[in-house]
Length: 355
Image (cartoon, rainbow, N blue to C red; front, side, top):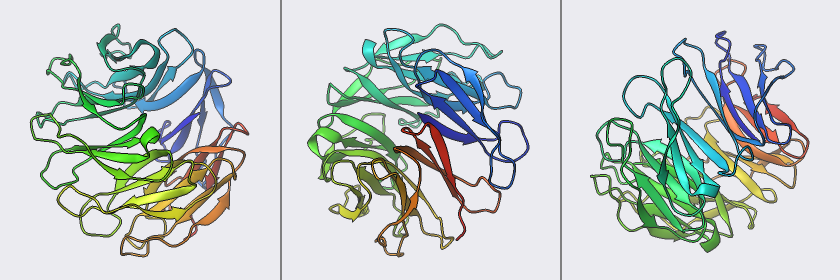
């Protein structure tokens, strides 16, 4: 199951979109305006919808739903991103096809339909995909993790909706989650990747022309997964926040300022943390950490002390197997609320912020 929040009916309130992999449906839960949601309306998909995204694909000013259906063919489409890759003002679709070892790009024809995908070879079993301009030409490029090839692929946008062949950069074992951020302050987006099988996180610095230096790795705990970046100590530099699934903790790596990071400092979470988000939940101007712990059926919130360290987590009950967590202000009070997908109970929990 995957989740995102977007205002689908134009009332100024964030609604919830969910991909339901077990029932072959996408759900829309409309926001009533007081932090509660209407009963879901479901829409049929193909087999095993996995990742969900939203973009206005037909130019009518309304967000549409994009979903990958992993078991609907033999290519196993997985992660999806949306970006205008050919500069025509219309959002196109980028998708990883894990079983066929490629990334597909579907150009938007302008009326809500898409041209047949053009595929680009990746490594073995591409997983996470991100669209970002890594060479400074104002065109979104593709960054993809190749889970079984132990590398990261970068496909540069040629400018007409096509992409150059993938250039690969060695990662650790089983690269999983990826983020992009300018970690050394040179104005260029760098790559951060969790290497689950080698228990480290890799940082690949952008050389400035769309190529990247050899990764520098930093030790994590066991099986690092979801990763985000945020400036947790207020020095203007993005730090690394990740969860370590087998070690039951969250790891923080503070940015030293020259593209290198301090050793990981860990904070206990619940068992088997799967997803992490960062947001200022108590209004003190400092990003806090939100973690979904899948086997204890709770969400943990770790408040930022202000100097890059965090208090012990406070836990809030979710339902069975909370797996994916996002934050969004769903009741319009200016405070980020928590939305979590509960894979084991086939529902969503919404935790309103009362800080």
